[in-house]
Image (tube, rainbow, N blue to C red; front, side, top):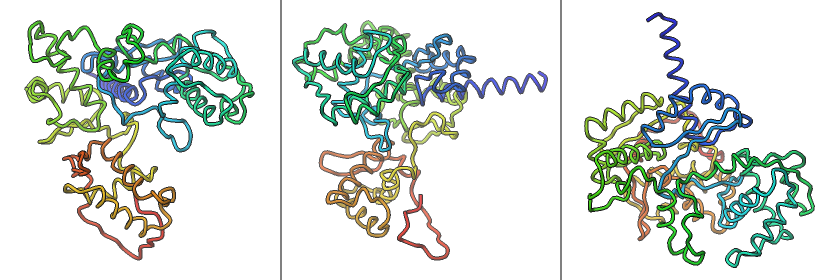
Amino acid sequence: MSELANQLVIAEREEISRGVRQLLASPLITERGAPEPFDLIRRRHEPIAKWFDYYCGWTLTVEPRLGYVRLVKVRPAADPTRPARRLRSARAPFDRRRYVLLCVISAELFAAPVTTIGLLAGRVRSAIAADPVVADFESASRSERMAFVDALRLLESHGVLDAIDGSADSYIESDSAKVLYRVDTTLLLRLLAAPVGPSQLGVPAEEVPLRVDQLLTELSRERRYGLAAGRHADDTGISDVQRNLWLRHSIFRRLVDDPVVYYSELSEEERGYISSPTGRRLLRQAADQGGFLLEERAEGVLLVDVDGIATDTRFPDDTATAKVAALLLLDGVMGATTVEQLGRSATELLERFPRWARSYRGVDGVRQLVSDAIAVLSAFGLVRTTKSGLVIPLPAAARYRVRDVRTSGTIDTTEEPPS
């Protein structure tokens, strides 16, 4: 093979791996929002789609004329560490009200391809008024308008809504603001990544809160696995093909979605599969094709993206106070500790760095800082908490242990802590 041919093969492999990782970070990519990633995935969509289908069982839809690509990531387990976020500076997670408004707005957007923010608010108000379960939408309330705008801006970020004239933020100040929207209903239909539509379940509204876990399982049920995905004790009716397909897909879905996969969190069948010669070969193969570095330890395995393309959130990361605090407090969690002990460590940090973490210096600041830091560490698979209030380190926490600290010159402890 000539040198030029070798270079072309290498370039193609790099583009495929880059496309895989870009879709893991952003399962919905539009031509308008991200033209370069969209063009790359459009050109290399066949091998990228094969990678996701073989390893994860996920479908990649590419619509060049409509200007979007959509990776349908299906997982039956709810992930509280990846909420929808408000697209403002604080990026606070959506609360219950915002999720409700997002769902109602999405349903009402099918009424017309073009609408105004006032007409849409009116339709939402009428729809909610007819629902005996949901609290009325009060557009005269500023907090309600803010929640409404947060839902709209999320839809804008996904390309479902296009503000032709005006800005949604103006609605926060006044419910008489004028904003004209174009609606992409085709893209709106692609937002829901569920094999089974919610309307097909036919569950009475009063039963939903009592059966949330069951309903999530039903929404994400994939027929091709049969009973294999249910982990039934009785294997009757489960073929070897279905079992092996489910084992492969369930393991790799966790590998590409979770920061770390511990063997202790896998079922006995999954541990057997991943430690088999076939499983280990597929691990190395998937990592190589996807552009990941495979890190294997006695306790588990993780796929590392050294370029940070597939990473939607980072750790360590000095862009958020909670993440800095999480790293600084992690040394105190090398053995089981209590929330109270971490609170004392956090108090020492706040005293040592008086100009740092100003938003956590209120009456309940220390408790909130510890709570946010623990949430970060839990999300990255570094600690787990018990009902009794113990914070227990997990094996991956050792990767961030500070073994040796060297300083030179004079340290100004009034400045922010080093990242």
